[in-house]
Length: 260
Image (cartoon, rainbow, N blue to C red; front, side, top):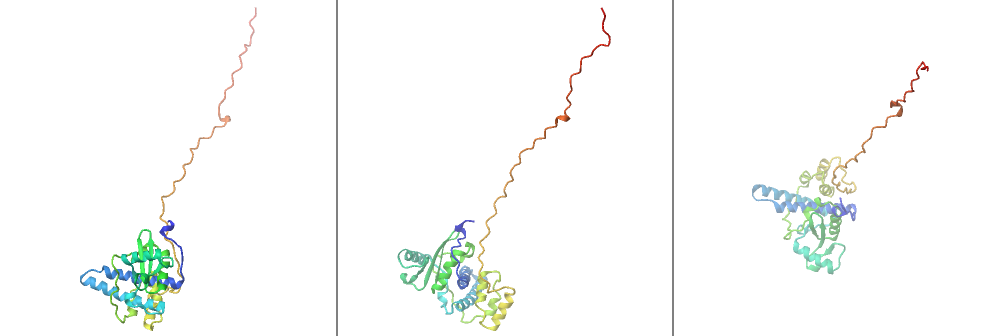
């Protein structure tokens, strides 16, 4: 794993972590709403997306302490706004990669980024707190979690949300294993007792107040290392005592002497 794949440049506060995850939950539901098809299944998918957006919008309002207009919920940047904001970064006042859209005649703030393997990512938010949270999010989360923030061809519109939403029923559709769903649930607590009971039941044995833990993805396993070849062992030299060494025989002397 190389640094551009997972750049841990900055870690925001726990509140920043919560805001970014709620905003990403909203962006994911906007993608579902946009990609829903026609017919009965498409209508059902859009209805579920609107329900989820309404619940997440309530969580965002609770987290920020102020109501965000439905049309100004965090959403991906379109290419034209991305290009305009990028020009502002080069010439106007900026804070890292967060820029006010006032210079382009638009309300709110833009977050610009580039994620290896995903490309251009961007977000727009009505408050700088959410924009700063998303900036930290873009810098610290793996690419697989940021696909909802890919820059879109046309501006992303938020569908009309209902004035009231059954938050307890909404909580039953949250996934306890996802960070964004946990952040949404955490910021719905205290809304009413029925919703609190649903959160306790859905997120049993999960500490919603646990500090954020960023775990880089494990590096892909490489091919197993080849074991070094051992040098061939030569058979030991036999000891000399095992070799049969024959000594030359002494000359034979006759027992009788030949007389004259």
